[in-house]
Image (cartoon, rainbow, N blue to C red; front, side, top):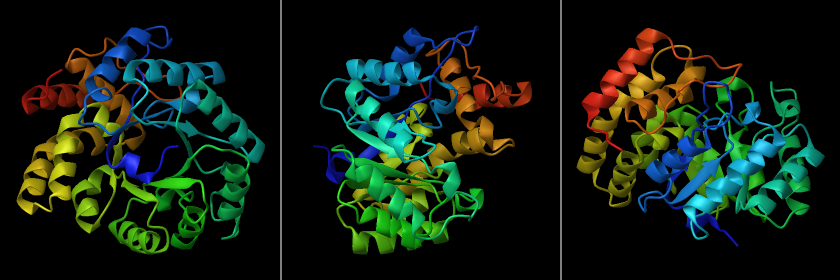
Amino acid sequence: MLNHKDLRGVTVATVLPFDETGAIDWKGYERVLAYCAVPDTVAAVFVNGHAGEATSLSEEERTEVIRRTRAVIGKEKPLLAGVIPHGVADAIAQAKAAREAGADCYVVFPPAALGGGAASTDAPRAFFDKVTSSLDIPASVFQFPLASGFGYSTRALCEIASLKKVIAVKEGSNTMLAYEENFRVLKAAASDVAMLPSNYDWFMPQLAVGGDGLLSGLASLTPDWLSDLWRAAEAKDLASMRAASDRLHPIVRTIYGAAPLIDMHTRIKVGLKALGIIDNASPRLPLMPVAPDIEDAIVAITRKSGLSS
């Protein structure tokens, strides 16, 4: 069974291309996987998350994404799948379906009922306890930005991490203060749970504080460059970390800098289209295509950067 050590390194959160009609472009997706998921520089693969526009997919499509991903990456590389539940029964059903389709671990997004500060501090642990105790599959926590109202407190994260079947936290609190606090407290209380920093603006400082890898949609576009940053962090080589971060910075700011930030994964697809990996960068509604000036900037910086397929 998968454990926290298996996630050490870069986990790519894959984007999902569609054709002009809005149908999944499976051939294009195979090319995406060959580019960013198959190489040995990537430790694990995460599908059906924000990057993969999971909320726009049907149950059948989410299952097919898992099946096809497993077929391409093989049996050995860890495969994580997002679970975006309304409640306990829904979370359990989605996790079981993910496992049957070939996932090794399910990554639980916060249910809507736990957002906005309405829930008690004990509710997240109770929710995860009920879900994880009903399944024999490893689980991971999807930590949202604190500003969204869906991010868990340090105490809640620590209590969730103490549960037997939880093996990782996808840490997206989106402040360095929260990341460092969460990292220190969680590693002291649950050293066998992987902390996977995922905030694009903070990759280098997050790894400087400490982490067990990286989990990012940006790895769909820059898998090797993020792997270089990770290897430098493991070696405690500050100069190499800075060099890797400097190389990433123009891409990071072009993808994530301009509003609306919700377009970030569509912008990654624009970069993949510029590299000739996919044919169409358009998302599914309610997401919208990237504005022409932003698209032009992404294409220019992608080509200037030296990235190649």
